[in-house]
Length: 250
Image 1: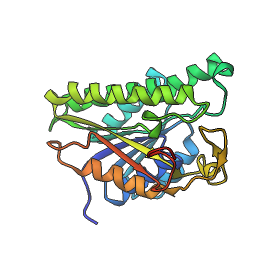
Image 2: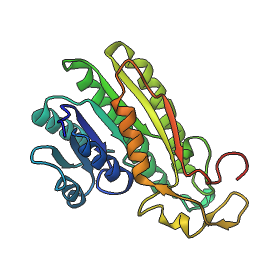
Image 3: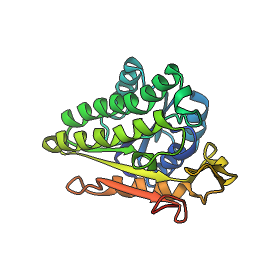
């Protein structure tokens, strides 16, 4: 394998889609920074890398000081950042709108939206000032950036907001050679989404089993977006289980 001199940051890298994406970047030779709340699963992913290829940093993406420490470690270790996959998030799905606690709302917004903003902003500043200048920011929007599931107001609101964040970064980053795109994922099979394969609430009130896809397909798509020259950008990509109830009326 020819080493890839580029550096990628993946948030929420200890499990699920983040883990799959981190491993995909490692396979093609990136140096990969793994960020997430818990150190142990990050270390388990990093253990699959070659010596010096991975850096695992326990991080609360919704905390500005924690994110600042993360990026100081990236700069000290690798000197630059080429790609960030803003993936860390929580669902908050399953509570009727009228029963959503404010603390739940605040936690989902803080992790999904504020966390993406903080990480993107720190990456933006590094990309602006490094040489060669520029880089790529990829945000995990989710199918919920387009259409809600029942009882998902906090999650759906943040994912709609991610679209606005993506467009703003894409526009503001042009002059610094910073590209920003969004990948909207539908029914990738992970530990958290496995329940969909057993049955999940639909808009008509029924419980239905939904088709799933391999999370590695998502990882390959993210790596493809990252591999493009900075003169080219995938602004929005939707990747989904072909037969999931999204297009049309289910």
